[in-house]
Image 1 (tube, rainbow, N blue to C red):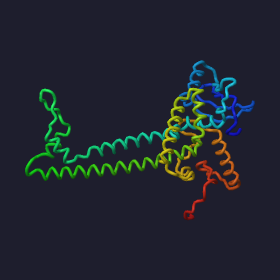
Image 2: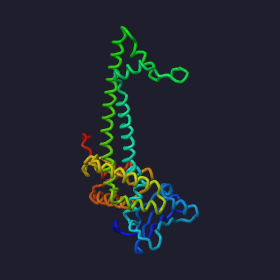
Image 3: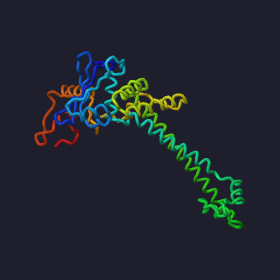
Image 4: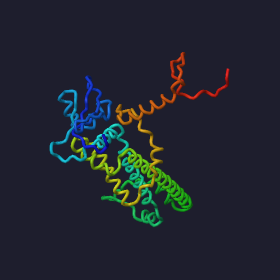
Length: 307
């Protein structure tokens, strides 16, 4: 089936132990398996699946209401959902980095507002803060005030302390700005990786509809945040321009079987094709190491010294 094929339904076919499943899509009486793996990750992401598994049985059915115009229910949407279940960070990393950037912006603003000017020092010395009943309010900067405002011969020491604090603040601001630049670069790469994995902005609306229909709350939240951030970054022109090839080369190749225990059938098929090609190229060249049982024909011959 093509990625754009409209589906009639999708079924999780469970094993007798109900711990693993095959995800099968159905369109015009045609069936195709798109994924297989552990059932638990799907249950964690789908309210519909949780409700059905609680009733027993060995299958979970995903289908839209009869007569609904569910143009979003396609093979591509289901595959992207599976990919998200397998690796949620592919979408979530983009806006978790944004949270870090906002925290750094806040820290930079605080450091900028903490600059102590001589006029502020004099004002602080001339107008001590008091509370009702003339009881002084504890000052968190009391220790600094004693050093800064000692009269007489210690005034130069106060100036030196102020200068040292100023230099430390400048260094801290540089560190924060550097970290912010690194995060912006990383965020641009995270966005590019998401697009390379087929999570571009045009596919967000169908995923939101899928999430709304079948109770995939985490997917919906990720899509909505991704869309909002994409809009804000493009309006302000803040996205870094990164070549698709660079994004693909830096992404950790989506493993055929990751920690979630889910494998997309399209990935498995490509792996099988690759293995078949490799095997055909090495017909007549392979040999078995009789001591270890390892097929050594698929590896290059050693260039070491001959005995």
